[in-house]
Image (cartoon, rainbow, N blue to C red; front, side):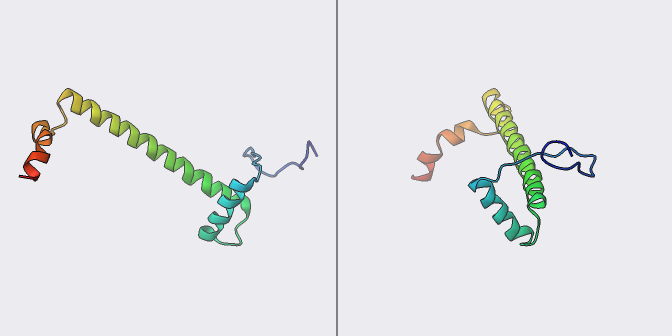
Length: 93
């Protein structure tokens, strides 16, 4: 035995996550979706993987938004900026 836990039969390193109120709530919510009998480690793994997917999607959306803004500034977006500038006047008249 080394440290606090016996050696695990796995090739993958382990991480320790303190179960504070926020993590306990996340585990409880995850169990509502995954299943009430799911072990906390399985729930946390699923939450971590889904969270990583969400972070990647957020990053991709930010990049796409930035690229779109640059294309608007460069005049290559295909938007009719003059029509956008006058849309309020045309909508109410």
